[in-house]
Length: 176
Ligand SMILES: [Zn+2]
Image (cartoon, rainbow, N blue to C red):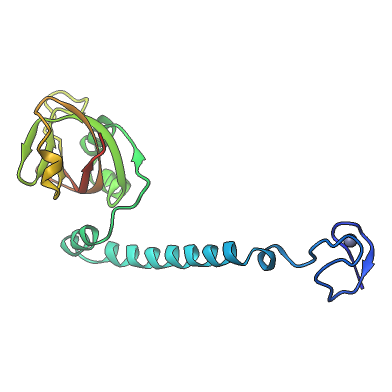
């Protein structure tokens, strides 16, 4: 015997429904098989991506970049400012890379240069005469067409390493 969860009447321990108040006695997961199924899938996907991410981190930088460009862009980006990113790299490149590398970020900045491979933003750091600039690789050329130098846009991309002052962002897209 057990007590009904709803009306507290003593009922058969194996009963799925209370004979008195018809309250469902099964646990939450048994009552919501579809949500339970989705939760399990989400969990498996998270475990899968965690394992994939670890592989990327332990291999060489080139392999990590290739893996990053092969995987689809995650939906939610961390909203930051270009200055925040550039200042971190200006202060300490090693610390900045460990903080930002492989993170999907979104920021607004003024377009300095548009090239075949994407957009670059110079003069983003707060430090005077900083050489640090941000370069966004954009594969979709149609996103580059309507842009103009000097225009402020919002972009989203995955932070890579800094080379000769240039912070490289891959898989970029223009948000607005
Ligand atoms: Zn009951």
